[in-house]
Image (cartoon, rainbow, N blue to C red; front, side, top):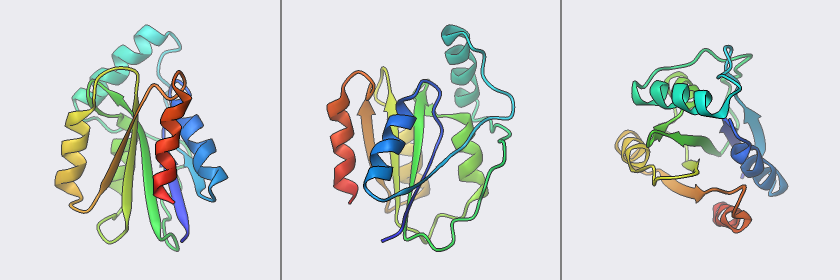
Length: 149
């Protein structure tokens, strides 16, 4: 099965997930915002949380939308203000994912991401969702990814 992991990472948690999935054979594709969030963690999270709350989409750098030939798509997003990050909102609006096996991997430092989980469950009825709590701090959280292969 050919798997593609599309993700955004602000603090590095998504990069850890990408490394683990790549070690299992997944191709990884990181998305980056054209206009980066502030470098200050506080202001970056504040702005990112606002963008997520308002369901804004972010312009992306060199975003490759081609998902042809992949049997399984995994989308990775930090949870901001209990919601999906704005760069991943852009990804979701630009892809047709209805006929693909689909998994979301959410990573967060606090909270549960229930709003994000409810959103994807409503939009993609057969979706699988994994939630990783602070994978940079709790490396064992990454073991949950092994259930995808």
